[in-house]
Amino acid sequence: GGEGGEGAEIPEVQIEAGKVGDGIPAFRLLVEAGLAPSNAEARRLIRSQGVRLDDALLTDEVALITPDQLARGVKLAVGRKRFRRLKLAGS
Image (cartoon, rainbow, N blue to C red):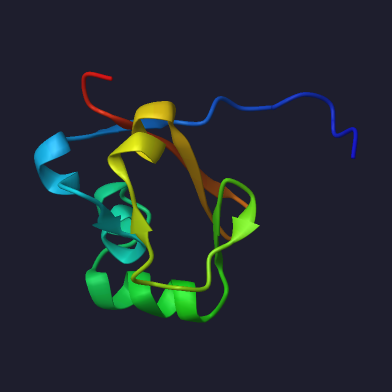
């Protein structure tokens, strides 16, 4: 799949550790990332198979994203055009 590099830089969003706790539900992460306006919309997007986490289809709206994952950084995509890289603040 050579599509000529990354193209545009993916905007990075810092997530506060206090919001993550032992893990943050996928739908909440979508809202924190600014990719969904509300929890309900975030859940709907995930259920309609419109969301990818690190290029894998996200199917479980309450899947927990762990602090370890966020410390390494995860990529969240909605549809084909909206991307965010999420990092744990201070990591």
